[in-house]
Amino acid sequence: MSATTEKHATYVVAIANQKGGVGKTTTVVNLAAALAALKQTVLVIDLDPQANATSGLGLPRQEGVSLYPVLTGTVDIADMILPTPFENINIIPAELDLAGAEVEIARQPDHLHVVRKVIDHVLEASVFDFVLMDCPPSLGILMTSSLAATHSVVVTMQCEYYAMEGLSVITQLIEKMRANGVNPDLHLEGILMTMFDARTKLAQDVVNEVRNHFGDLVYNTVIPRSVRISEAPSFGKPVLSYDPSCKGAEAYRAFAKEFLKRVKSRPAAAVPAIVPAEAPVIDASTTGQPLA
Image 1 (tube, rainbow, N blue to C red):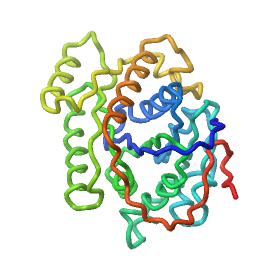
Image 2: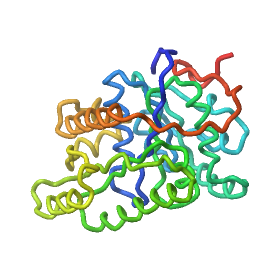
Image 3: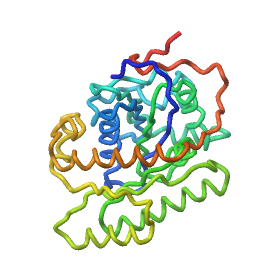
């Protein structure tokens, strides 16, 4: 865990794709690890009830420990921020009850902004450099309200043709949220091609087609299909910790540098503050306890 209380301008990024199995959670875990290695402080918010990002960062799933009680107003977000075994990375875990958040959020009058309201507490605390949100693989309320709370979106895409259909859906959703004023500053940070198999022409064809359509929005880094990447979560570790010298770890380090360069090269769009000024203080060095 991080021991710093230094203030930072916090940039919120959602890692999203309504299609499952495209390397979304793997990217959240390993991007967090790679950014942390670059001395960036990171808060991961696991919004998927399967809690794979939680276990991938070495924490067990715990009943009552997630964003769910925060969204329902029973606890402060600071109480849910936990340290991980990895320096500079903290997490708000997920649990199965998070699936019930869809129903709870739908009952609230301003349901598209409930995640933004709680995220604003983190932004006001200015402790973390980055907040990475692992969105659930769906187009439900939890996903859309998460996109309403973020500065930008990184879309992960498997190097297969079926995945291209999902890519058009998520990009259209981003544009609708901008156009409808739900999050007018929302933008597509980039598209990360994952599970690339260099042995097949199909994989290269898919990468080329996506690059031809989206241009510079597609990251230069391509994440390879890797046994080491697949094995790492079972040990509760990012691949960068599990096997730092493997090709998968090298790829995620390269991606983090590219991601960081892009973000630092443009001014961050500010998410309008909605919560009152007396938001609880959040300290990255705590174990989920707000400071007085």
